[in-house]
Length: 141
Image 1 (cartoon, one colour):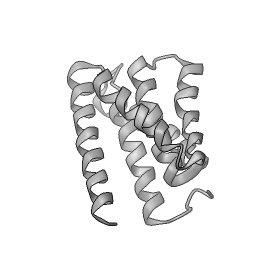
Image 2: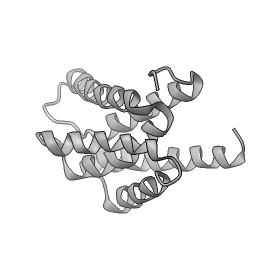
Image 3: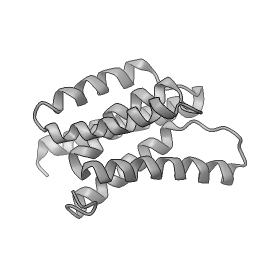
Image 4: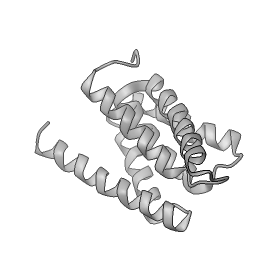
């Protein structure tokens, strides 16, 4: 990974931490962090159109809707596109499933009826992207 890649990872890491802290403490994901990331992700699809498969994540949340907030849907856009860029549609499906599993697991461990879903979404996306980078095409893409 070159300097540009390292800077991108660092920026995404700081962005992720800010989102997790905000969602845990305020139970919402701010537009100022989700909307610009979504716009940048859509622009990136001009250079890698297959990343548009990442739209499956926010579309799925829009269709199911139950328990999913607007911030989660806005966060699903850049996360889905990033995951699709690295791991394809299968990776997106894995990230969606993993995010739900993480939220259910954290709720069970914390004995909580409700939890912010953003941290689980971010953890799942990072996990799938890391696996996709370390082992190219683990998801059959």
